[in-house]
Image (cartoon, rainbow, N blue to C red; front, side, top):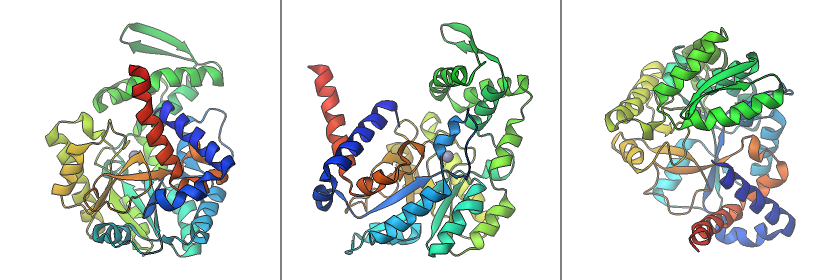
Length: 356
Ligand SMILES: [Zn+2]
């Protein structure tokens, strides 16, 4: 999600919260349900330089959201039950909510699962087998460690190499804001090449950095034994699929599904597209997911689940509970669906204004 979209959604949230218009709009905007997206659940205060904290919610916030969703008379259901409801098109009186976690972080089991057990409600975790095998690299984790560790960094931008200072926390955030979008525009192999080179200079092992955070297969198998937990796939290497060739994208998806099935001995019918924005997963990937027989595949495109999505089950939107929107006041407003309608209207107005 880019800054413009985030800002539009935040403005819509504030407007709706203070005007209370969300309640009036809810009957026409709330849809059939919601798929929540999370990554980390972590207690405590972050270090001063912790940009990936944006991917994290606190235990208290997650607990509050689960309680709020139950009070709002949603059925909190497994992704299989959500699929059954969406595929049948039979939307009952009660809306459904599904909680999903990307990447397979160990804190999902340490901190999130106890909350779900307390309420006896299910959760889904999407894992990338290379991560669980200990041979994956979460480059955004490595990059954070590199920037935290180093006092300057040489970046070979297209218009020439520049050395960015990393002396203060503010310097580190300025550098990150330049480096991150520059990297994200590249193919995955080029991202890893740059980040691994910096990691070598900073004496950081990118594979170990990933292993420290992500569950191994023994932990995934233990989690999967809990009837409240569904394990889905998330590509083999956490690939940005739209940047891959068609064959490569298909392999990343199919191999990850097979690998999860092999490790767990059960069917894997659910998938999350890494990064999940429109630049990382689109109609080609949605079609591959259909051909692979997946029941659902989720993006990170923001939205609730509309009442008629039976032909869009491999390109489903989610509602992020990540740091950007970690505000209890706004969860209620988000669940009305009204902010997304406002965002749609605002976005459709933007190009017209530019063209005028
Ligand atoms: Zn991911």
